[in-house]
Amino acid sequence: MEENNAQKPLLFMLTYLLMKRRRDLNSMDVERRNEIQRRQRHRQYFLQRQKRTLMMPLTQSTQNCSCPIPTRVWSNTESTDWWERVVMREFQPADWLEKFRMSKETFFFLCGKLKPRLTRQDTRLRPALPLEKRVAVALWRLATNVEYRTISELFGVGRSTVCKCVREVCHAIVVLLKPMYLCLPSEQELEDAAKLFQSRWGFPHCVGVLGSLHVPIIAPSSNTDSYWNSQGWLSVVMQAAVNGLGHFWDVCAGFPGGTEHAVILQNSTLWAQACEGGLTPNPPRSFMGRPLGYLMLGDAGYPLRSWLLKCYPESPRAMMPDSQQTFNRRLMRAHSVLDVALLRLRARWQCLHKRNDCGLDVVPTMVLACCILHNLCEVHGDIFVEEWVDVVKHGECPQPTETLSLSSEEDEGEEVRILYCEYFEQQEQEHSQSN
Image 1 (cartoon, rainbow, N blue to C red):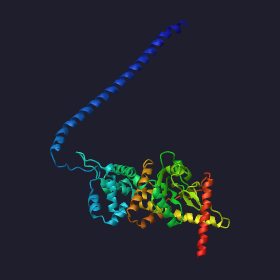
Image 2 (image 1 turned 90 degrees about the vertical axis):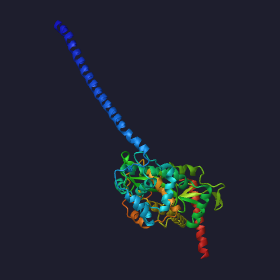
Image 3 (image 1 turned 180 degrees about the vertical axis):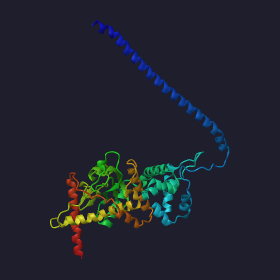
Image 4 (image 1 turned 135 degrees about the horizontal axis):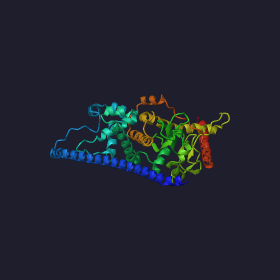
């Protein structure tokens, strides 16, 4: 017992010495690392100082010289002859349509509209990329969906520059042109749209058709399961409303491919505007002896509302009344204007048809930009080449078919639908009597 007590101070002393030695070694390592970092900082400081000293005479001589120093535009590719000589000087009208999906006049009109946001200043070291070339790079990507590397070699710019041009141009199109070419119609425009639908499609009080488009994408880094659609491929959904001319006036993009149509609609600004009376004229127009606001047409995936009509559910023809069959036939005839508009949109801008390898933060902006450019080309009367449609019709990603909405149907919507059945039945009787 006494021997154990005598050994305790010795063990305590040894433990203390070992811990002290470990602390000393750790502190020496820390001091060594700090000294290395200090020397590195000093070396970088002196190198930067030496570089500035060497650059000062060059900068002064540049300021005193009026002639520009020949340097390359922000690029890793030396040749820009294709853009400067072939496109700007030798392209024919058909070439502009084929490569940029718009006429030369519309292209320069677009460049003028985007100038306030895309103009860049030259620096002493490099000239800025011309505005027209930046817009052309973005349009080439939207029209063909080819890889950044191919566009980089074609235009003589770096791949990072191509990516930056696509982002900036699409964002500028949405910010500057959306209020002009993609906005809720005014009351007069709604009235004109209702007259057009009645005269061209035989559907009174209708101001638009509502539908959706699935845009193919690559697998996202997270939440992949929600992007699988009913056809078994990954997509982002775009909800779109078009008028009787096939022009888009409301677009909501960015929802995962597995999202139901009703959910997208209820989370869009169109739903809030319509529910708050944004589609109701003041005073309401009369239809079949009762006041009725304007309305839209949708597919089976949307809920039935007083301002949103859809077809009656499919059933054997013997079990469906003639009035309902007539209503479905008239609605599908008017609904075809949306199908044609979406087909022309995808044919003109094939980034919406082929698998898009851009990030999910860019795809919604690209979709909006394509819709705005579609309206711009349609308003300016640019030629649409029918051969573009063949690529879309033989595509790898067929559009999913709509599924019946599980949302509760509105009684007032059913009353409006019955009212239209009576209207179409009355028209059928008058037509048969006249013959």
